[in-house]
Image (cartoon, rainbow, N blue to C red; front, side, top):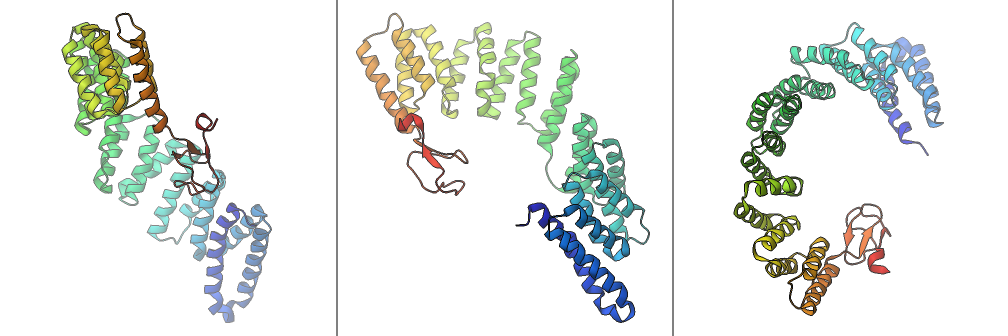
Amino acid sequence: MMTNAAWLLMIPAAAAAGWLLGRRGGEIKSGNQVTRLSNTYFRGLNYLLNEQQDKAIEIFLQIAEVDKDTIETQFALGHLFRRRGEVDRAIRMHQSLVAKHGLSEDQKTRAVLALGEDYMRAGLLDRAETLLNDLVEMGVFKPQALRHLISITQAERDWYMAIEYAQKYEEVGGESMSKVISHFYCELADQARSKGDNKEARKLIADAYSADNQSVRAGMLEAQIELSENDDAGAIRAFERVVRHDYEYLPEVLPALLASYERKGETTRARSFLLEMTEHYAGVSPLLALSELIQKDEGVVAAYTFLAKQLQQRPSVRGEAALINLSLSEGHGDPQEALRTVKSITDLLVVHTPGYRCQRCGFSARAHHWQCPSCKNWGTIKPLLTSAS
C-alpha cells in the first residue's frame, strides 16, 4: 500500500502528466521529445509506486528542467520538499524559480513568498523577513506575508514590530487582531515591570487595554504592580476586574486577592464579592473561601450550615473535605446529623461521577456506549476503575 508521502508525491506527478498530455498535440513536430519525456515520466512513476521516493523526485526534477511550462510542477516539488523537512532542496528549487526568466509577475511573487516560507522553516528569520517585507511593500500576497512576519517577530520577541505588522494585517486582512496586539503590549509591560520601570509598564498596560478592554492579562499585570507598590486597594480593584472579565481566572487570583482584602480589613467587600462569584463560577473555590470568612465572623455552625446547603446544589470532593473539617471543629453540633449530611453529599457525588470513559479521546459518560459519541471509535469506552471495582 502506498504511504501518505507517496500519495503526496502524486501531486507533482499528476502535474507532469497533465503537461505531457497537453503536449500530445505537438507530436508531429516534436514526437521524439514527447516520447522521451513520456518514458522519463513513467520511469519516475514506477519509482514512485515502488516507494523509491528519492529516485522518483529526481526524475520529476529532470522533467521540471525541460520547459518553463512545468512551473507548477516545480512549485509542487518545492512545497513537497519543505513538507518532508528537506528545506535546503526547497530553498534551491524556489531560488531557481525566483531567478528564472520569463516568469509572470504572479509566478515571480509566488516564488518569493515560497522562498520566504522556506527560510522561516530553516530558521533564517532575517532573510525571510527581508523577502516578506518586500512583498508587503509591493502590495502582493500582503495578508500571507504579514501573517508570516507576525510569526517571525514573535519568535524574535520584537514586540513593537509585531504590533506594527498585526495592525497592518488587521487593515488588509479584515480580521481583528485586538487580542493578539493586547498580548504584545503586555509582553512589553512585563519587560518594563521586570526592570522596575512601573511608570512605563502602566503606560503599556493602558495600550493593552486600548487594544482589548477585556484583557485579563493586562489586569493581572496591573494588580502585580499595585502589590509591588503596597497598594492593596488598587490590587483589589484590578483583581476584581480580571475575574469579572473572565470568571475562569478566579482560582488564579483568589489567594492574592483574599490577602489584599485581609490587609485592608475589607471583610464585607470580600464576602460580597465571593457571594457574587458563587453565582457565576461553577467551581468550589469561592464557596470554600466564603465559608472561611463566615467561620471567622459568625462561627463554625454558621459556616457549616452555609457550606452544607451550597454543596447540596454543587457537590464537590474538596467541599466535602472542608465540611468534614468543620464538623470536627470544636463547637459544632450533632455529629450524627453531620454524618447524614456528608452521606447525602457523597451520594450526589456518586450520581454525578461518570462511570465510563473513552480510552481514545477521553469522553466521559454515565452509561456505556459501544461506539464513542465523540470520536466515533468502536469498543473504546470502558468502565472506570472507581465505579467498576
